[in-house]
Amino acid sequence: MTRFIFITGGVVSSLGKGLASASLGALLQARGYTVRLRKLDPYINVDPGTMSPYQHGEVYVTDDGAETDLDLGHYERFTGVPARQTDSVTTGRIYGDIIAAERRGDYLGGTVQVIPHVTDAIKNFVLADTEGHDFVLCEIGGTVGDIEGQPFLEAIRQLRNDLGAERTVYVHLTLLPYIPSAGELKTKPTQHSVKELRSIGIQPDILLCRCDRPIPEGERRKMALFCNVRQDAVIQALDVKSIYEVPLRYHQEGFDDVVLRAFGIKDAKQPDLTKWQDIVQRVMQPEGTVNIAIVGKYTGLKDAYKSLHEALVHGGIANRVMPELTWLDAEIFESEDPIHRLEGVDGILVPGGFGERGTEGKIAAARLARERNIPYFGICLGMQMAVIEAARNLAGIEGAGSSEFNNYKVAVVGMMTEWQRGTQVERRERGGNLGGTMRLGEYPCDLLPGTKVRSIYGTDRINERHRHRYEININYQKKLEDAGLLFSGMSPDRLLPEIVEIPDHPWFVGVQFHPELKSKPFAPHPLFASFVEAAVKQSRLV
Ligand code: GLN
Image 1 (cartoon, rainbow, N blue to C red):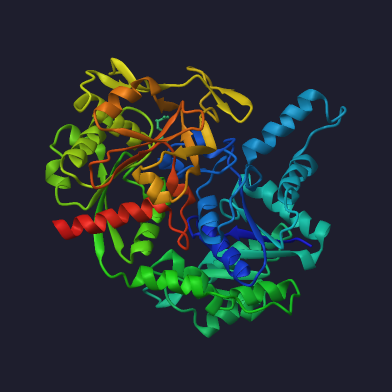
Image 2: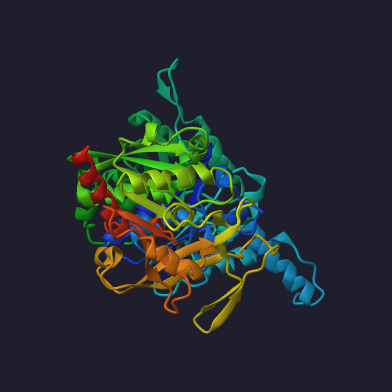
């Protein structure tokens, strides 16, 4: 029997519902249950794929090629369960399907309405593809009270009647702000948020209360009374230093016990949290630090590189060090020699990105890393920049560039209009739709014998996740390899260069895919572990 946990948010946004859901998922898993986590986003975009990273943060890509909310990244990092297309939905997707069905005549002349048609579609999404899982955790995006969230709340309200109270639990995440002049944590915003929920027929079972100091007994009692929950179902969620502490803290506060009790489960075994204790110990007590510069574009907003940031932390966990990250806007290196800011760093990472702005700065950073033997990790656009740099300055291909940009003469990086994926031929066209038209999701890659990446991964064949339109042009392989840039990872048909490396450099690797999406704190991605290890070696040199 699959049970459903619905997580809503109140008072303000950005309280960390995604992390709360992921942490609860991890705790249930630690007790031996199987979990799935999914996100329902009330905005009208069909998916976040076309949204600016500044608006929405990173776009998280699943194995099966869905472009999703970054919270799915938290879910995967905390539980190790690969997210799927069926784990992410938006109002735009729901309405898109309903309108297409209406045009086909599927509603047989009926009037199509929010209730029941939209709410039914939402319920179908919640219930689909859940077989074999003990718990499905559904996070509702936005804050209770948002107009666009109403159909979602109505749908989860109906699900309690459809499935029964023993299969549904509602968790409400709120904020208790501290008011210095009163010297108190205030419960009124939580009371109002719960009142709003109850007015639409949802009585939360558990309140998860974000706060910056412990909640006094009196405030707990007050919330229990006014919000109609048991006092021990008021769970304190204190601010923590590392997100990886959250599962341990929640367990201390009794969150998972209260969830299980709400379902009437009495015989659950105690969770095994040793792996989380080890992670926290490594994160909180590193044996050293390394300086890594990230030369990117969306450096003003950390969420734009969420998985990347976490993957570097995981690389640190693997090496018992804490990477200290300096986020640099690549554009500065278009007017300033990168040497001044990058000479002393232990590693340079150029992440993925879109558009021409700042690309010459990234190329300058790649050049410095190559010439000065500083470990370099190029991801997606960062690989393309390293290849253009090598084409220009090692292979002497003048005007080498990417056809994504305006200022190129020779498209060393260009648009592939067609390629194989299994038995299917996929097409990408210039001037086509922007949404969902990239090489997306998991693709296999062969690692060539004797290469650095072959020894880093310890296997011949890997599967990694992609999100890009342009590819390294295979026609330049010979020229580039003769000049010292080795194509060490290739698509199985040998047409798509997936990894490049410089054999006589301490650590210079570019990858066309996004390895950061698959890294976990308890299973650091081999490339990040190896890159941070190289940075540790570099830090001992300088
Ligand atoms: N803009 C490049 C492309 O589309 C790189 C994309 C990326 O870095 N994710 O190919």
